[in-house]
Amino acid sequence: MTGVHDLGGSPGGPIDKSQHEVEDWERLADAVTIVLDKKGLKTTDEHRRAQESLPPEVYRELSYYERWVAATELLLVEKGVLTREEIDAKAEELEESWGER
Amino acid sequence: MRFKPGDRVRVHAEAKPGHVRTPGYVRGKEGRVEAVLGEFRNPESLAYGDPGLPERPLYKVSFRQEDLWEGYPGPPDDTLSVDIYEHWLEPAREETP
Amino acid sequence: MSDNDHDNGHGHAHEEHEAGYYARRIRAMEELLIEKGVLTEEEVRRQIEYMEARSRANGARLVARAWVDPEFKARLLSDTKAAAMVLGIDASGPVEFVVVENTPQAHNLIVCTLCSCYPRAILGRPPDWYKSLNYRSRAVREPRAVMREFGFEPPDGVEIMVHDSTADVRYMVLPMRPPGTEDMGEEELAELVTRDSLIGVSPPREPARVG
Image (cartoon, rainbow over all chains, first blue to last red):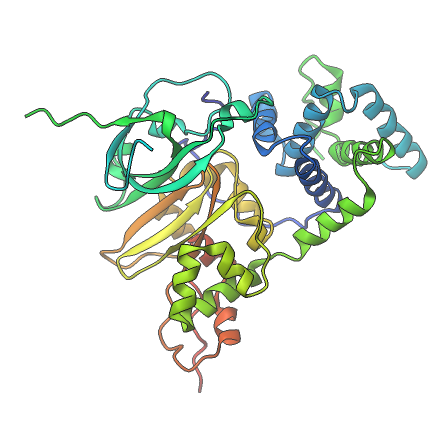
């Protein structure tokens, strides 16, 4: 289905050639996604479909790895591996114990 | 395997619901099979947890840029190739005399 | 940090745009997955190392070897994974690779309009610009304008061939060997091969003029 992700030929602006420093959480997002793939818990195709299912404005606004994290969460919840509530709780627990914002 | 290198093919024009790997910009367009890339499982059903069988041929199909884009800003020799699964392709219509 | 309130009626939406929201999510997911025995810290660490070990350098070595060794070049073009293995680059996995050769008549450009597929198992992560919505949108429709933004204007009579990696194949460009490099060894040649030349937005470096 044509969606916001089907970008070929859409109008676009100048290419921003700046490169951000890859952050540790992004390396983690990459690795966790691939490990889940290698274990047969999700496929590349499901991962793409999950990204494509994001609301168009979210798809356009999120960075590359933010989309990956959103897709991985969506699939883990969809497949009943984790619940959103436990992820919420764990995220809060980590924030409290490490003082992360 | 329906097609071989050199065959002229047309990409199905109709959009399909769900996850597809055929970009909108080649739908309904005619191109040329450049290569048979192998046989692979169907991403359209893999995307929903289905095994995606049977495997089907994947073709490298080239298009003249002029045929894809109105007012393409480049010479007529410029091409674009897309990797397309067999079920999206049909033989190109014969030229009417 | 933007002051812009992205709240579209769901309180959650505002939180998602706070810095670090997705970082917290993935760390939480990783911890939970480890606690539940779905994966181990070791597996994650090894996968991170795997990606860190991959970079432009792998592609540059493949190209430099292909420039000096016609048999290797033929193998690189016909069985990329096997050619990579010869140089100790493990690109095994379910995706296939195809290397497309630049010639005096044709210059190749790689894009993945649908998501940013890239030959990661050889080259590692793609640059941010390759993943950008603008590149994904414009590379197929106006490749010459895109290359111009990278400072490259193909000579007259050169055909541009764009490859949209829409399926199970990942593409890499084999650039043409720059002139004036006849006396250079493989290591020196590899230094000329930029990551951008492996994608096709610009050519490899020319050798520095001496004297």
